[in-house]
Length: 401
Ligand code: GLV
Ligand code: MN
Ligand code: MN
Image 1 (cartoon, rainbow, N blue to C red):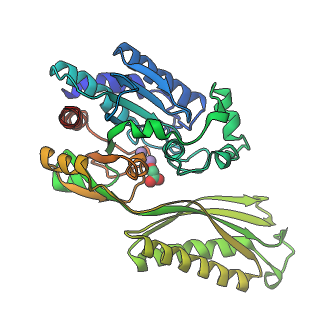
Image 2: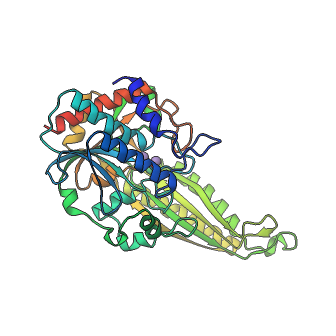
Image 3: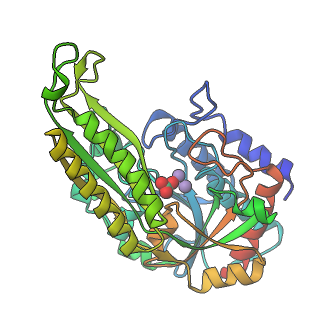
């Protein structure tokens, strides 16, 4: 595989959903941009004579061999993005999966198990709040009734968005027989840090994923006039929020962990009014589950202390929590041995982490020279992506024998 050949397929997907201005992507699940990406995938799959299926949770599968066969070897990732995200997070794994099928055929590999390329839906949770929603529903890690009640920022329910795209939302839920037919899952992904660049390696193998969660903080106080309310009479939830953001940063550093508040909503969001309410979303990640629990507990305690000081109220609710993932099965061992690539942990979540509880799973990373992800500067060279395709092909060839 040459970089030029990788670039040719990449170039047919990369213009879709580019938000303009900053070069980032707005490919939120079930929006027009996402639907065009899905159509692109179906066309590419059909061009390769793959059999395309949409599963009960809206995930797309392209099969070389029978979808009903046992021990399937599956690769793929997702096509949705975070707001103004980079182009590689997700799509790189999908494009690489399609190209790996081409390479297997060119190499004359006759798989003795079915091979599939999958596109999981709503991996980022950017629209409906729950990351890896497609794989969680498939594996039974998320309640379909609760999924149907999820709403986006405009109040549109997941049920409505999926229904409009032609999905039967009453069918949402676990798919144990599909899961049981998968023998191995490999997700190739752009690296979301600079470890491979520092090691001067184009491709790496994942050892595991840090436990992580998303928590909603709701602050309430007393809305009032910004010009006439004396400072000592205020009950300003923005102060409690601001202190909580600083406390999260301090606590994460103290615990050797990560904590981020990257999204807030303020009401009424007026320049000349003290806010009445504010909500903030905390993303917290740590190397082990105990540290994560202690981190979130410390942040909650600091938020509550500050709320007492401000005369406001705060509540914290977990929206999704994912436990520690160790890629320690045969797929991962084989990848590390065969590919001779560096082995790295990651703090980023992936469908591979969700699948790993049920299926022998591994992940490959492709070097990202900027080390930036979830932002337009995310990058990977065509040459490295081509190496990624070859390594993925090697692994699929071994696994499918
Ligand atoms: C997925 O990209 C995550 O937020 O870890
Ligand atoms: Mn991501
Ligand atoms: Mn991703």
